Length: 212
Image 1 (cartoon, rainbow, N blue to C red):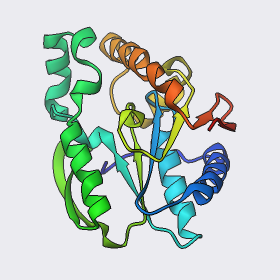
Image 2 (cartoon, one colour; image 1 turned 90 degrees about the horizontal axis):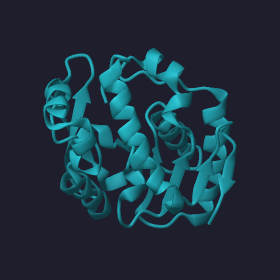
Image 3 (cartoon, one colour; image 1 turned 30 degrees about the vertical axis):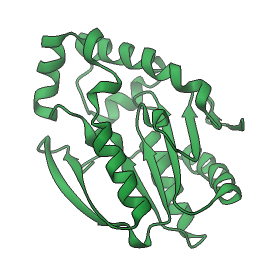
Image 4 (cartoon, helix red, strand yellow; image 1 turned 180 degrees about the vertical axis):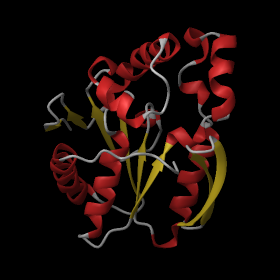
């Protein structure tokens, strides 16, 4: 997303190095990595660190952020959620999975792809065109990214929204009010169901555990 604030720390770099080791062991043509976790856990920072680190190994990885693929536009989302009920609408169906899967298909076909890109300054959605011809890997980060099919490596950040308050305030994506807390609780309930799918687990202290 344009205008996003990345708070990259040593913990992201150290975790990224270990994940890169696993990627290099498993890499194959059209390799895809999915990173899931609750809001503020460092998914985007980790995706960035991994993509940059892979360059040292001669590999080009493209980070894709699923938050760019919401069905409801940013300026309309809060009102829409409140009108329809946070408990009813927050979750998988808020995202345009057909569009996400189209991006992945374009990557595998090594062709040009036009993707949505949210500008956090204007809260409008721009279009970004990328040529996947020379891209070796996709790193897809998002709350529910691990729910995608045909992902080669699934990374889960096992930190809850209760433990990410500081990160939430620093990034300033949404005001911390009663509405936002309801959204975080609903996301928590949805995201925790993905934990069992993980190949790699990142714990509260950002230590990395390879599961499968």
